[in-house]
View 1: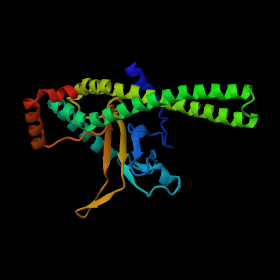
View 2: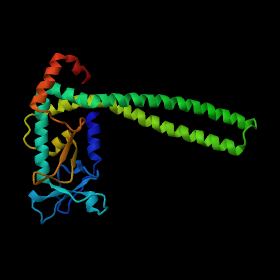
View 3: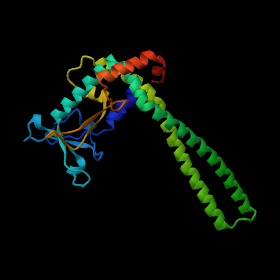
View 4: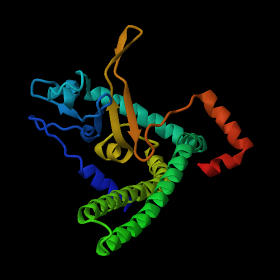
Length: 266
């Protein structure tokens, strides 16, 4: 089922073919970090393979939502390959540190959201029951002649509209809860999958689809007199992975050794 869901997600991204027929293994993953739009793969007969590039679709379509920025596919490949190698090395060599850091970054926020979502569901369900009683009461008052037709219609319509809105909110909240529970399963799956790539040297379409969920490209910035294009690589199930320094890793390992209970929350 996990594999099926992943395949459906990949198939949902329609691949845009260029006039030359050239495609890129990164096409469905590329997004503008500034406006959130997809980035188009640009290739033409006049453009050598080493110079084909991605460009923000919002700029190309002249919608005025984004300033021009682009990045060559060779640069994307270099950045993503390096990121994958670094993450594979970090996660496989320091799995306890990765789990601890991930939990520290996500679990507290996730648990808070779960608690608030459960409370909202409970409140919504209680309110729906109250609305049922109110609808019955106004109906009885209307039948007994104590409530004019226009007044009854307005009150009943408002109550039913509120019920419908609450019902949709409950459905959305329950779906969010299910995703939160699934996150813990996804992290374990990620660890299992990442171990298969310890000897990786070159990325292919299967590897990119398996490990990468999104690649964000931002407008270039000038650092020390040189322009750089910031890129964020989101890994499947776990998002952006911040690799700690050697000093930070030693500190975290010491914390874990002193208190093994820390890993039980990861």
